[in-house]
Length: 189
Ligand code: B4P
Image: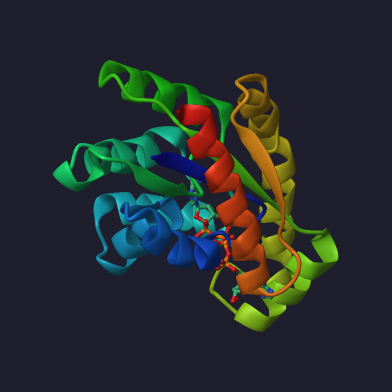
């Protein structure tokens, strides 16, 4: 299956994906992790991405698409994958649809992790990642609302979206995520 997780910064996408990869038995593609790895390795892509991430902005589409396109061509992604934090713009979603269509594939389902802003701020303060200062985090929330939230409508119109309450324990949320996956499986049959 090809599943996408969408949610505001700190919604717990990475946390749920850790559980989901074992359940789905597909590779986990986190663009946030790919970008942080590129920064740690000091590649040209990492150097470019770092400026945007430190400012709380989305990295340019072409850079992210380059990383994802290369990864999706790997043999282990043939049977499916879990896309964490990608796509994040309508442009990225359209490019992903094109890319998959050329390989006779498609997205099977999209899960929105929904968490109120006060809780996002609380989690961010507890996490203390480099791009988690209150000012940068506020910009990331703003960019989610402006650039990523419109994707929810994009996938809703395709009949692929399920919204999951992202409040509660990680295990309780995972139960809800699994229910969404079961619904995607039923729809695929
Ligand atoms: P990401 O790495 O995707 O970061 P995120 O949105 O902050 O994280 P996530 O939702 O996965 O939260 P997590 O599980 O860690 O992106 C980082 C940056 O990379 C972006 O700002 C952007 O600049 C760039 N980027 C990435 N993809 C891009 C793209 N496609 N296009 C352009 N730019 C892109 O959880 C957060 C915290 O909450 C953790 O500390 C966790 O322990 C805690 N938590 C999780 N679940 C919880 C629960 N149920 N209760 C309490 N705490 C919980």
